[in-house]
Image 1: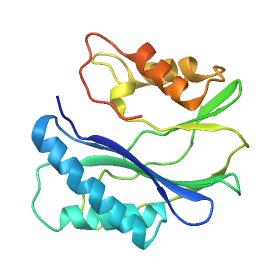
Image 2 (image 1 turned 180 degrees about the horizontal axis):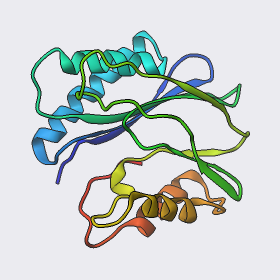
Image 3 (image 1 turned 90 degrees about the horizontal axis):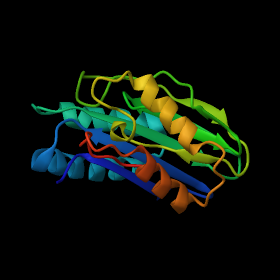
Image 4 (image 1 turned 120 degrees about the horizontal axis):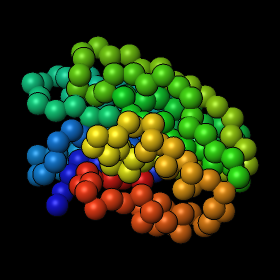
Amino acid sequence: DVGGDWYDVVAAGDQRVLLVVGDVSGHGLHAATTMALLRHATLAYAAQEARPATVLAKLSDFVNAEEHDYFATVLCALVDVAAHRITVASAGHLSPLLIDGDESSFLEFTPNVPIGVARDSEYQETSVSVPPNSTLVAFTDGLVERRGEVLDIGLARLRDAATGQRLPLDDLVAMLIHDLASDDHHDDTAI
């Protein structure tokens, strides 16, 4: 009943927060302990420098310094609340959904290689302006991925369920978890 999905939101200076969402390959105790290791390493690197690409590069170097039998997708997003700006870098992780009232779209960027796949990986950042009072929904693949189904269908299902709801954040998350759950799907999820 344990897995390797996690998220953190940490202060990164005046009116800035770093959002981190990750998913370690596999399930069970090994994935959970690996997740704890990566989570704490990510927080340590974020305390040194909150630039998303820098955090991912340091995490990649850390994982690739020794032999390992896993990989992880990780999304880092530096949210500048006052400037209404998000700077994002992805190590193979799915794009978060940006909701602005009755409109929504997935942030557009090119994801780089997952953590643990290649040595000396480089990560690029993309910065986007976001409207005031918008909502960013970051998640792991367990929320949208279904066996035998094209991933785009699950992403569309998430976008349709989340758009236009105008719910308080806790209610929106609860609704998404309830509405997107499936009896035949057993992947862990972070949102």
